Length: 226
Image 1 (tube, rainbow, N blue to C red):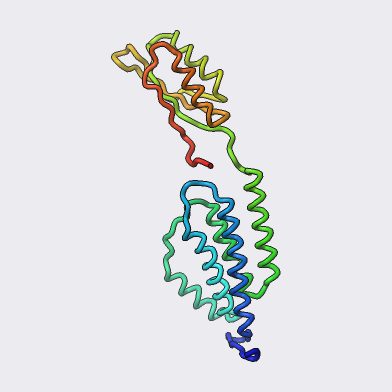
Image 2 (image 1 turned 45 degrees about the horizontal axis):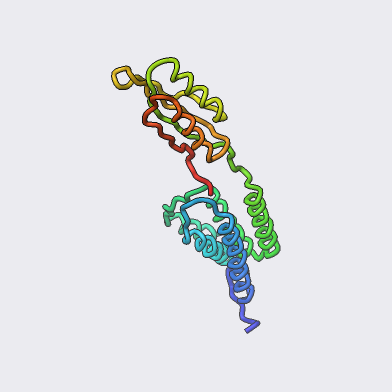
């Protein structure tokens, strides 16, 4: 069995070398998928994405083994893949990087660059864990939109400005329009808060203004990080 050889063009590979390449691709991409699972942030979880990382790495390794150093065979495989249309949209650019990393590991295993595959998996996983532990890129400011109606006049308006200035990091008037035949004024403010719970204190302060109506707060963050 040891003498069994598989001929791929000008490249002759023993069967156990092929098994080792595919197995190492499975293990390395599995480690990357494990790190992705541990560092995942968000609400939309995809089990299929993790399996795509592992299986995609093995497919990439298999393609590199099949191609070998045969240029014609490589062009044929590229042409075949061009026929297949991948329409899956990834939720986040970070997902794309993890899929690409698993593919890169698979390619390294396919060309029998085992040291590069192992070291690359280790350093990539270490970098991902470090960024997650240090919360790199996490925003400390929270944006929101505050809407309310107050009686027309300078007194109520000055109270609003005072409350906004004492609690928010920054605030800006978005809309101002008369309501209830001019008896009320409808306001919309965009605010930036230092902490997530600060909006409750802001609403409590605004509720102290006499005659305020329809007080609402809308979180304007595009993604909520847990």
